[in-house]
Image 1 (cartoon, helix red, strand yellow):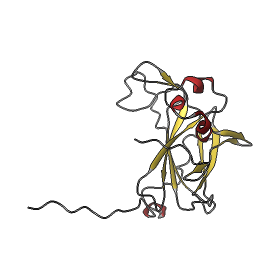
Image 2 (cartoon, rainbow, N blue to C red; image 1 turned 45 degrees about the horizontal axis):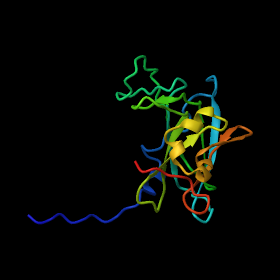
Image 3 (cartoon, rainbow, N blue to C red; image 1 turned 90 degrees about the vertical axis):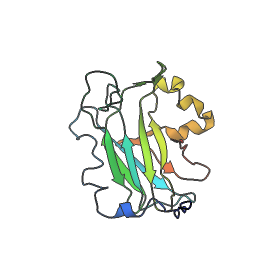
Image 4 (cartoon, rainbow, N blue to C red; image 1 turned 120 degrees about the vertical axis):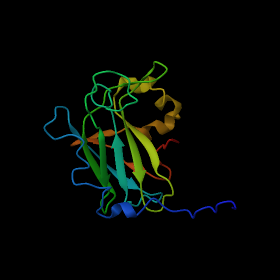
Length: 186
């Protein structure tokens, strides 16, 4: 038996743009509009030229308002049953949206505390791998000591911070270029 051949490289899409199990009707509704503290998080996905990416998928995963996950690796008692996951396709202009709530701070294994944030995964045609980033909240005092955010060069941190808009918060994702969003290796 010889050495197995390397399989050809494949992009992560556009299979996800088809109506299948990856997308669902209320995928962008992490919480209902009637939930206290709910807000709209809107943004736009653009490529290195600033052009919209019309067939991307944005996923978010976050803790609840108390900083808890309903996950076996969250050892804290009293799970809230919070799923905290949303998935939204981008439209023809690269726009996406979610209805969610601000998560609470998270403890780290070393006893530090992470500032409230939302984890983001981006999938799109032409990308060989997903990219992962975070959304931090504006005017959040805990941002100054967050163990992840403080490792990002100060002049790039703004690419990880949402900005207020008329309906809630805005967070644009730039895949490349001078305003490229900071992405993390996971």
